Structure formats: structure tokens, C-alpha cells
Image (cartoon, rainbow, N blue to C red; front, side):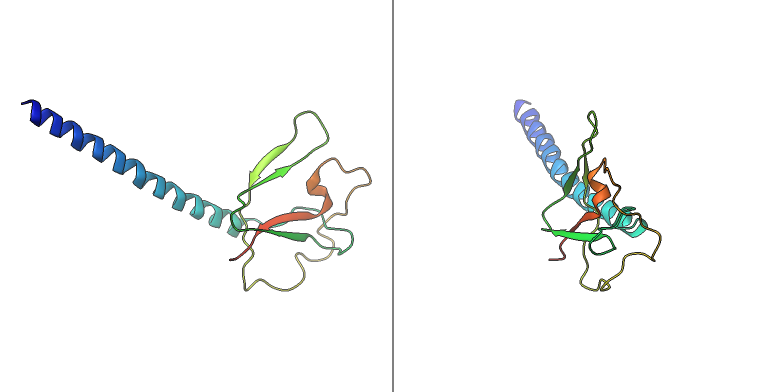
Length: 124
């Protein structure tokens, strides 16, 4: 009887350990799917353009980078967001939006998104 209970405890432990590994793999693929859907629905840039180029500027980061930090001038307005968009090999050359849809950097910017630099992961 003791051997049977020990065997059942070992089988239960093994099944719990393997189910945790399987769910970790499932979460990773779910995160990738969520990022893909987010990138398909929303633009890669914000509402501001970089003044030297008169369009938003993509800052290409390594593909292992997953989070970005936005700083704001104020009490505890600093935030971290995931980087959803990935620079594709078939991306168009220049131009992010029709003229007139983006705003310039304000005279007194209050947030780092207002400078027109936006992070995008590399394709490799």
C-alpha cells in the first residue's frame, strides 16, 4: 500500500511539473500573438514627429529588447511599456503618415514621446 501511495505521489508530482512547463511555453506564444495583434491594429509611432526629419524616427533596438521606459516631467509619471512593433524586412522606405497629421515637439515638452523617437525591435 505504501509503494502504491508513493508511486501515485511521484506521478502527481511529475504531471504537475510537466504541466507548468507546457503552460510557460503557451504563455510565450500567447504573448507573441498578443504583440502581433497589437502591432497590426496600432501605428508604430505616436502623434509627434522628429523636427530634423519632419516625420517620426524609428529607433531600432535588438530583438531581445521587450520593454521601453517613458519619462515625464511630473510626479511619478514615468512608465514602462512593452515594445510590440517589429521592423520588417519589407517595410516601406520613407514616410510614416500623410503630412499634417503629426505635431511638432512643443516648446516645453513634458514627456519623452513628444520628441518623435519611437522604439521598434529589429527583424533578425
